[in-house]
Length: 188
Image 1 (spheres, rainbow, N blue to C red):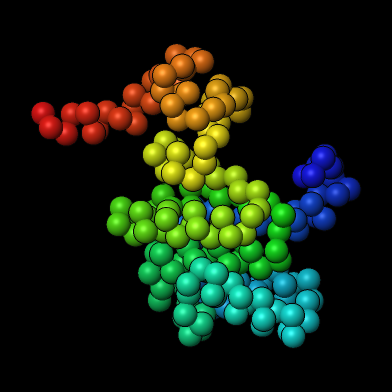
Image 2: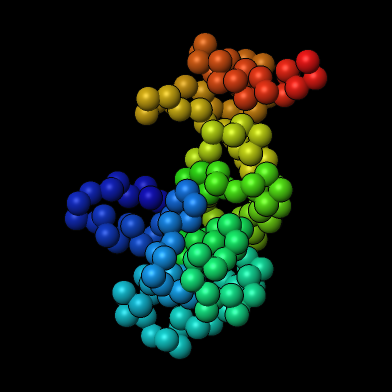
């Protein structure tokens, strides 16, 4: 991170410079939304006077009404849970935001709405965002530079057009074709 290699001696320090959102948010079901968001801050014994303003700022950023923070994850919609998970990832103001299939468990309408909202949020944050997704349309929506991995190695890097028109490996062609297959046969 910022040129510093991850080592056992600096893992905790570097970890605090990363925010992470996993599939389906990964919220703790026994904690309220607010307790989920503030968990790391409380663990690190940050002063409450610093936590509350940050909480308000994040609610505004992700368009989550403050009163929803009193609810537990099972009392929130899928989109609201993802907003809470994003708030938790951003609470410590990390340099890098990692997202692992953050929208995968959402219905298509909610997913599309959140894609647009997240893109705006990422533009405002001006942070490095790394998103893992198997949806090429979603990847292209968020980034101009896509990286296709297979077995832990980079097969190709470039725009969606590069991957589609100039595949660097037969697997790239297969992956792109599999993405389009359901739409190509929809009219048959």
